[in-house]
Length: 607
Ligand SMILES: [Zn+2]
Image (cartoon, rainbow, N blue to C red):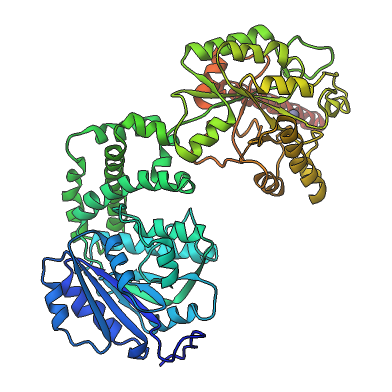
C-alpha cells in the first residue's frame, strides 16, 4: 500500500482520485482487461473511484457494468454518443475526487500508477502529471500496432531528451494524465466541438494558464491496441484534418506546428498531387487497403513494418488534407490560410551612385522603378512586416502574391527615389534605421574607409510612416551586436525599440540585425523586444513561410546590377541561383589557378 500525505484541510479518508474512463463499444477489453488492471492497484479502495462514461455504446457495455460487483466505488454514466471530449466532461462533472486521472478504455494501468499520480499532486501548485504509454505486449500484432509502437518510442525519447513536454510544439496525450479537478472546472474542461486532438487542445489551454507539466516515467500504462487500419486512415485522418484548421484558428501558437503549415515548404509538384487527391469525389486511400492487408499478415518482418509506416503516412496525409479542405471550403483558401510564401527583398540605398561608397550598396532610381513595375505587373503586392505578423497569427489578410521590400540603414535618398515609387504602385515596405544616428551619416561605414551618405531625419520618418511605409529598428548605432556584452546589447536592442516608439507613437514590430550578424544571445534579446526580425546572409536566402522562425526571417540581397531575370528568381525562390552558381564557378577557377601555381612551384623545385 502506498503512503499518501493528506491534503491539508481535508477530512480524513477524503476521496483523492477519480479515474475517468470514456468508452464506446469496447465492452470486452474494458471488462476483461482495463477494469481488472485497476482492481489490482495498491491504493486503499476508499481513496479512489472509477467513473466510466458509456458514450452511446450499442454492445451492452452499460448493462454488464451495472451487473459488475467492483471492490471500489464505481460510477456508471450513460449518454448518447457525443465523442470522447463530451464523455470526459460528463465524467469530470460527476467526479468527487480532488484529482482526476484520465484512462482510455483500452489502456491497462501498470502497478502503482494511481499512487504515483496522487503523490505528484500532493502539496504542490496545480500541475498536470503524465505517465508513459506503450503498447501492451499481448495486443494482437498488426502493421498499425507496430507503427504506433514506433511513434510512442520516438515521442517519449524526445520528452526524455528535452527534459519534459514542450508545448505547443509537442503533442499532448490525455490518457495516463492527471490534474486537479478544480483546475478542470475552472478552464471549462474539454472543447466538445473538436472531433480529434481534444486532449492537445486542453493541454494548450492548461499550458497558457501557466500549469507545470510533470513527467512520471514510472507511471506506466499499456495500450491494448485493436483499431482497424481502415478506421484510422479514413475517420481519424479526416477528423485530424478538420481539427487542424479549428485548432490553428483557436490557438495561433499552434499554426506553425500544424501539419498544414508544411504547405508553404513542400515542393510544388507534391502540392499538385495533394491538391488532385483532395479534389477527387472519393477517398483514394482505398487503394492502400490491399497492400496494407498484406503488410498486416507479414508484420513480423522489420522491413514490412517500415513499408507499412510509409504507406500509412502517405494515406494519412491525403485524408488529412481532404478533411482540412472540407473544413475550410476549397484548396485555394487552404493555401491562402496556411501555405503563403514570402520573398523579402533587401535593398540598401536607391539613388545616384556616390563617390567612394561600397559597390553594390546603391541601386539606381531607374532600375528600382523597373523592379517595382515588374513586380506589380506580375501580380505581386508589396506588404509590410505587420501584415506578415497578422497572417502568421490569424491566417488572414495577405494578398495572393505578397512581396516584402526592405531597406537597411535608412539613407536619405530613399525619401526622394524609392519611397515615392512604392507609394505610386500602392506597395508597402519597411525601412530599418539606426535610431541614434537619424539625420546624421553612415559613420559605421566611414570608419571602414567607405564614402559618406546622409541618413533619414526624424521628420522624414514621421512623414513616411503616415504614407504606408513601416519603420523597424536596426539597433541604435549599427553596432555588431555579436561583439557586445549583455548590458550594451540590451541598450542597442531595447533602446532602439524605445527610440522609434517614442518617435512614431506606436509599437515597433520588426528588427533587422546590423551587418546581418547574430548569435543565440542576440536572437534571444531581439525576441524579447520584437515580434519579427530579419537576417541578411548570402548563404542563407530563401522564402519565408509559416514554419520559418519569426526572428530569423530570410531576405535576398538585391544587387545594384540585378536584371529582371534576377529579380524574378528572387521573387520566386527567394534567391538568385545563377549568381550563386557564377560565384561557385569563380571560386573553382580561382582554386584551380592556385593549385596549378602550387603544382608549378613544386615542379620547378624538383628541377
Ligand atoms: Zn545595415
